[in-house]
Length: 359
Image 1: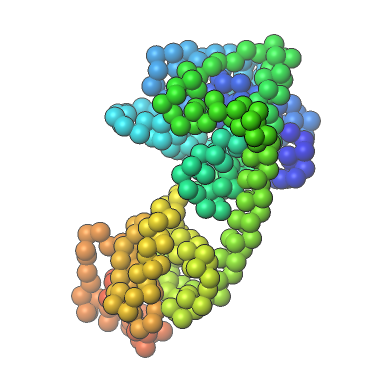
Image 2 (image 1 turned 30 degrees about the vertical axis):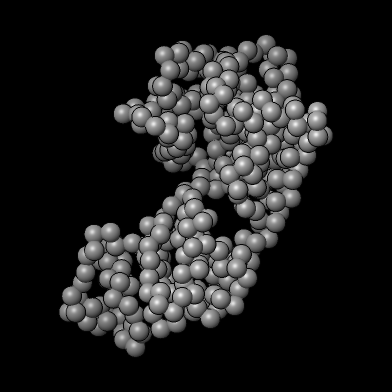
């Protein structure tokens, strides 16, 4: 724990931590509490009751009992409302993050810790390898990431789960086993069961898989720096979510960089937590090369090709338009746009952007 915070220091006084009652998250909160006590910080434990299993309420109550025993502030957050009939695992994960993030924002907490450990990293690497992920996917779970302004830290990412269980046993704390961890219908569970075979037969240990993910992480960050540099140098922004770049500059880049630039812009302008599917972005990159290409939509964005430029704006799903007079009035207020050759779809969003700004 100390080694993690020496490598990834931060100044915030309060850390929120998600805790489910499993060994990983219980160890996380209790280890954080010890570290915080020694470093003048404070940890707050948050339990999400998804209300998917009858025993979920009892487990949340058990966590509350453990937190009380160790003097740790604790809150239970409930996922209410109708649950989906399919994709429940993904939906539950998104709901959990949403509830945790909402609590953090409402309570002005900007750091959230999760209990991911070394085996989670190894499983994630193999899971993404099976799905054909590229460098970003194979970089696995990041030690520190950011989502919607919330810093997410994973202080146990380099610890074996056996070490975490030993920590709890040493402090007389029992944990709850999640029955879904034994459900072989989940691909992650199949991978978990197969990991010992990989190590025994091939010498492919959890540590080696995690080390490979770390190499990919460094490569990913290098490529992201290059992506940032292109966007800063070659993208012209007309508003927070309206920009264009010259096709000549775009196609002067390596195909991997074109893919990354377009993915990043679609994520930012589309205001999505994740980039679109890689295959769809690559297809769009290919379409941009065709002389007959005029535009397309992807990831909540519209791409418009005009005069050797690619414009990217939010998608106009309702097909709303503005009249000529509205644009003339806009140009009177912003004469710098008078000589710009701006597509109609972009003009619409420029007017909308201005109208939505607080007066």
